[in-house]
Image (cartoon, rainbow, N blue to C red; front, side):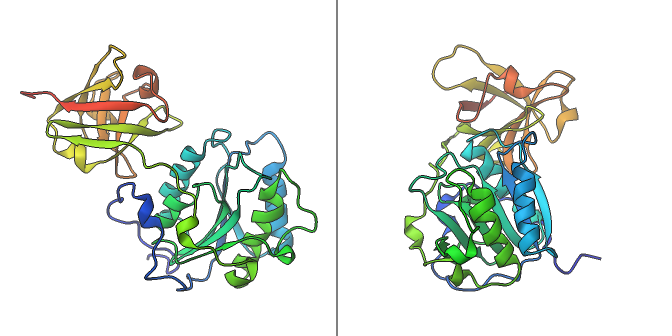
Amino acid sequence: MLDAHRRPPPPTRRSHVPSGAVTSSTRNIPPVRPQVVSLTTDYGLVDGFVAASHGMIARLAPAVRVIDVTHLVPAGDIRRGAAVLAQTVPYLPVGVHVAVVDPGVGTARRGIALATPDGYLVGPDNGLLLDAAAALGGVTDAVELTNPRWLAARVSATFHGRDVFAPVAARLASGAPLAEAGPTIDLSTLVRLPTPVVEVRPDGFTAEVLTVDHFGNVQLAAPAELLAALPARVRISPVGGAGWERTAVHGRTFGDAPVGALIAHADSAGRVALSVNGGRAAEVLASTAGTLLRVDGLAGC
């Protein structure tokens, strides 16, 4: 039986549409009562940063369950953190989702909390949260985290995850109203990441590498529908005249290509992905986040 507190996974993922993260027609609709706090950070696992954040939540809301999404986002990689968060939150219980990839900590950048129809997002106003907000139905309200009674007694200039975002999350998860955390923010002023490049052609498309995962799979910003129209074999080449090209099988899963061969497929987030059966596509394609790759159907295949 489906847990009554969990939403079923969406049948397909939406394409990357940062503007859809903010909605005005649903503003001020309160989200469902949170049941968990999730944590997504670039803190790593060597130091005590994660434990300190857990501890702050436990002190203020000992009954709230905490889910660690990951603490291994590459340091300062906001785009990677945003992608991981957005592709994970639809499958978590309704909750307060804290994300901290925050190279601007201690500067004039705002700390914010966003309400959506399916929970809250808490973190820096640097674009990290908005794709996840879109995945949860769009921002219905936003506040800047300025109420000192909601924060740690002493706020470090360099550890807002512990001193600002964790205590705010604990209070929201305990049922405190968002409006008490600070003043309302004009939704149009929220910081957005640049929209990743996706250019469609009759015989293929060009797309920016959105992320590279732990297995070396290369996820493109292109929605999977763009790949579906292409033939059984495709050509991958870099934009900018690097002078190489690779041929890939257009398949459904890794085993549809021979061991060591490249495969283009729809990934679990509904985007175009490039993988190597038994290998690392990021190395074969010399690609990292932000690389522009051209994907063309091979005639006669």
